[in-house]
Length: 189
Image (cartoon, rainbow, N blue to C red):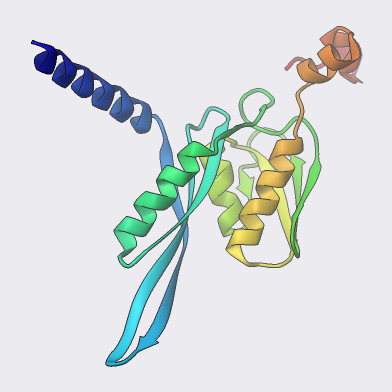
């Protein structure tokens, strides 16, 4: 009976894990093939960079290495799910404010955009924005075009993003006091 109960628990855990995993979309950003020269030829290995997100403000990235591509992608996806961050979005579609991010020689600038603009960004940054669920953003990459540096610089910028609610609570004010007035009206979140 105890064995039967533990099997049922295992099945339930597996179902919950699959349900949780299904809410995420993953995007393969880059695969790097490396060769090790050994006696008798070359031995190839693969490194994968993957971005994972739920398209509701949570996003993460991961790096995995293996001898085969699918195994490297699987490891990278698991790594990405372990390091998710939450990004506050204005109206569920864009950033609250313009921001710069940096990682190594990679520098990025992210700007808010009006509705209908779309995602104007380079490849690795585009994958991050699609995974986080952003619809309108203008981004510019300066410096390194290495996908690892670009993704890390983008995450650096997204971590600095703050919502008016967080700023108001930190200052001990109301959200309407913190928001700038445009045309006589307070801007809603």
